[in-house]
Length: 226
Image (cartoon, rainbow, N blue to C red; front, side, top):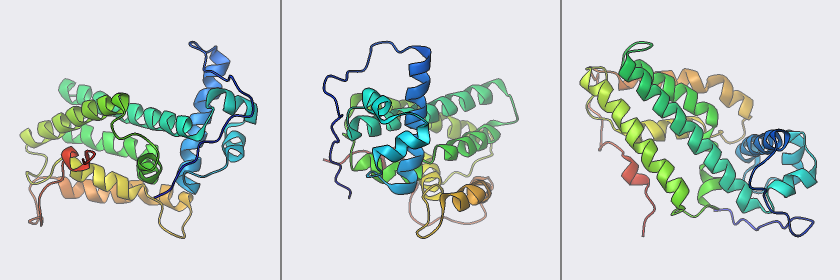
């Protein structure tokens, strides 16, 4: 497990403004997206200089928005989880409206869009840094559980999803498929992730072609212990 040491800003008194100007807001988003990709490729200890370079901003701009590493990692977690939640809620609305096919089609669109957030490559960064009981992240997680569970139940009720899988199975697969393999580049992962995800999704379809060992995985399996 990586131990994260907070990096102090070069100047004291850098406090996030309550409301950002449009250009400042764009800079902040570029920093968070650049940090997401840098954490996937290099882990939690990637230098702030590298993140600033990727974002196309100066170091002072980065520190003005994020005075330490923990604050930046938490913001990446909020961005990624909120984006995945929005994808799940959009897919649910599409399934309810009958847009773009049946509920399983909506589930597939959600899964393919979600892997673009590279959550598998971020798991170790998040778990080594962020408070597992963070109330804002906990609320997002519960809303995501509700949305994805509902989407899978709609697919099951339509006879499109096998009966012996649960939401945890889907998230394990998406996490594993977006975790860079040792000794390979992230570019190689990007090239094949959707191909292998579709192979997995095809295996979720009803009727089931085999009996799965063990039990379905659920969100409860990933709750903080203790």
